Image (cartoon, rainbow, N blue to C red; front, side):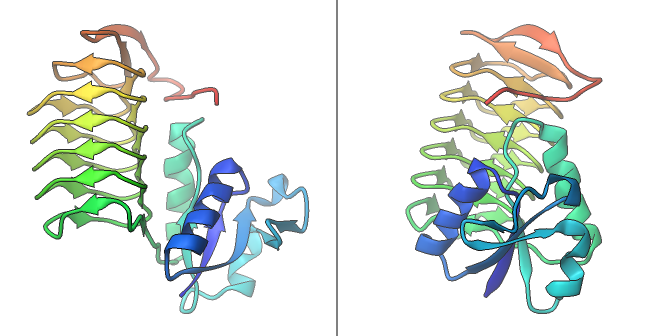
Length: 220
């Protein structure tokens, strides 16, 4: 099966490696918006302007993976929606080294990386990145457009809503609701529900800032 990767960053390079080494998919091209084209190729594959993509790769024979990282979380959502609006279908990458239970419900354009664990009855929506060694406990639900950094733990029955960022080695206890666009800093212990557009850090978590106007934007 042939796929196009949206992106030409280090995360796009990483996903190209995963798909090439660990999946049945063949990456045939990369694309970005025309204004960001800076060469004709990326990783020895064609780099195509997104505006021209349907002229070269039809929706019946090619699928997409949007490989956009965490620097601007709202941008991840918007780019996924742009591709979807063109009519393309998406693929997910689920590492063969991940422990994904057969009872899990998983949407599209997800990256579930090495040694991640999804316990029984967990649900994952669309366009999420679940990094190495993360644990999504039983009956937990990850909505859409979230980034879960390595070694994170999300307790049973907890709901992580849309466009959230969960930092390295964070712990979110069971039966909580993590509201839209919550940012949880690395190493945080989250014992309570969150509020929208709010950053938390510490053990236990405390409010550090809010970001309703611009969304979650991180350096990296």
